[in-house]
Image (cartoon, rainbow, N blue to C red; front, side, top):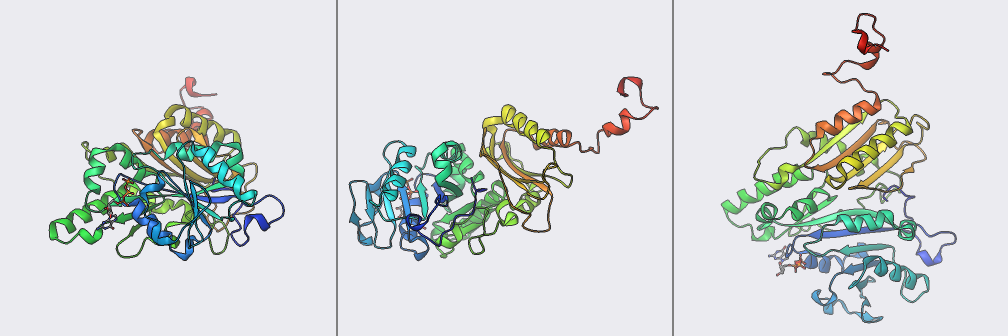
Length: 383
Ligand SMILES: Nc1nc2c(ncn2[C@@H]2O[C@H](COP(=O)(O)OP(=O)(O)OP(=O)(O)O)[C@@H](O)[C@H]2O)c(=O)[nH]1
């Protein structure tokens, strides 16, 4: 989804000719009581969120009165900030379709961004699937990123007790840390340091932004997609953050009593161009074998068939967003790089598969070419 044409956020959709640019969608998730609504409420008055449509689960829960609302109907209001606020009581697809239809028909003001607040217990994956698979929504929307709220005081306990909360953190692009204002004693400060370390291990690519310190601004939380919001040019290094993942890979601690131990983030990289068929087979096999355990996959690929135009990959569990190609490499790093977040899968298993499909020799395995073409090798191994 993030791989689509960059959204031109300079012109309202209704004023454009030709197909409108896909509208960026941000998922705001986080465990029950983590502070999603409080943060959203604060963000709604941020100038960076003007022309934003917000979909929330239960409209009544958010205290919008002070934001001067103008009602369109029961479910949609216009805030004085210029944001639209909608309640989705039923199906998310219907909610999104209705929002787009009403904008297209001029019934509501045009919006250039959507924020969806999920319920606290929600697994964000099905929502991401909708955004990556629905034929119409694929044309109109693109996933910008997943923002996860974590409570600085109760976060550790929540992560220990609920695997959903671990998943919410693991797939996040940005983490907002709430309630740090309550961290006022030495033991709490130590606990917060431990929580931060845990978040960094779980989601090494996601910046952690302190809400109380004013770090969780619209600017910092949004525009996590492939395209740099200022230049509108693909910024692969920022989007993939594979170096941060690789650095954290070596440092992951293991505690068998923790849900996190089952979640691993790792990178796969190769300089060699990758054949389209080998890539397809590799992805098929990984998705087929590990489907639900593949929490998230992001990547950029140097295709053997078209090495100058990198292929962008983005997947959640068994669902892969239709791949798209960039017109050129955005910087000098032209390696194929895949970042994967998995649960209950040993990275080495996927790494071995990757190396095998990419034809890469492994230090602990003889290079097949050497073995096959070597007259001194046992006959059974020769071609
Ligand atoms: N001290 C402090 N309290 C906060 C902060 N953020 C949220 N709260 C409080 O935490 C409680 C829960 O906040 P909500 O914003 O309703 O949390 P939520 O994630 O939307 O909760 P659900 O909708 O139940 O999932 C409220 O009483 C908030 O006032 C914060 O940064 N500091």
